[in-house]
Length: 628
Image (cartoon, rainbow, N blue to C red; front, side, top):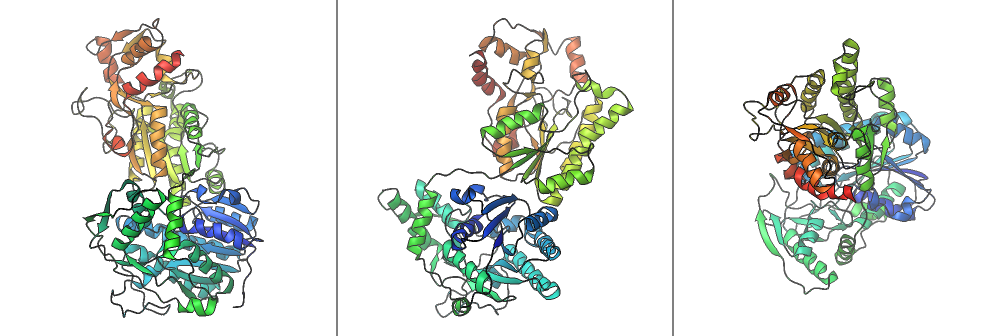
């Protein structure tokens, strides 16, 4: 077959995901004279380390961390790298997840895709755009032996929300090809398996079950038939489409090899047992409720690709499964996010840097700051700096010789600083991150609550759903309003992390709560929630990686008084420290209780998501290390 196109500078979207990473690893060697730009936002299963190490080190490879809807970032990448070819994988591709979050699937697979098409149209120098679609757009096929595969002209009848979004994307492919002449060719691909697949998918999920010899959860009857195309065969097919496909055409890429889900479980268990050197045993099944509609079979006709492209799959299922299991059993490094810190030079920001370095997570410090630099400058930096997650650590708690929030009580100029740093910066960044497709975390505060009749000392704690109730300072008033605003963004990829009394074991920091209170002569003996930053940041980073969103009380379980903290310090570190307690029943204690944001925040949500030690557990474990 005649080669119609020879790529030189290739952009692959979503190449840190399953199919995209395998494709790039394959194609990098198959096109030895081409340069590759990998554009990925690192959504859920994506990982920068899915790309082979030798490729990552090559001058022919570049990683651009960006959502495809980030038009400024994508246009810059197209222009700077003189891109002539795009292979477009980036999509929210989990059918089950799309049932629960159909609007997000539309955002990722339709709205963001349109933004990409618009950017490509403006760029104007692309020679070929390969759009990766799915066989699921055809809907299901009968299970009978006489059933014929769907060909490229078959009617599109999606059986799930994911397939519906892909049909919408195909409609825009046709529109931009017709109206603007974009050089697009499309591939509809069969059910694929191979290394790097997300563990919610059936093959990697079954491999994990097989390792433990656990129960195989089967949706419905387990008789749903699926074709099993090895990912390297899919990559070879996409190469053929890119080189030989006719613009405006559609090509089915698939296989006629089929197994039902029950048969797959037997094959996976046997292969895992074999590679682990164990006796082969049969799987144990457990039926679970089916999803709302589970297509029985996807059968497609690949004769057009065979005839016009000279392509057909060549890897046997047994060989593909062997390579897939071998990859899954091999440990590997992982990098699933890259963080942009806004306000990263303050106390909390510096401690977050420590936590990120400990986990070897790349991060950058934003140079532009909301309220100081123009909105356009802040947006431009976030659009082009290269990152997947933004954390806002900005906040005004002190200044000009006053080391407490009392600084903000000084009149109109202080009100301006308060609103700028404690409200405007947080909400502006939230909107910009949504626009650019960046996950956003705001380091907020729990100093917006105070013990009251409904939430007495030792009783019910304040949950994530409750709104600010303490307005005893200008700081808490503004922060409480910001907290309410952030709650309105709960359906976005936004975490509103409420911290309170942040403490670390770095005794060289003057802003550290522990550094300060060990020098106090008297301390309030009232149990309150506490954020021990090393513990809580570890949990926060994990939740950021999982693209969690919503309000989050980011405190250690188990309220503890400042007095008890220092008594533990006295016991475990320095016996010379000997503060006196200020009792709750005293007049001074009652005054502190009435005028300060003393409270207990519920940690039920946090501990249901991540493992976090109680405040006392953490202190008893880490304070002795300070003595040595």
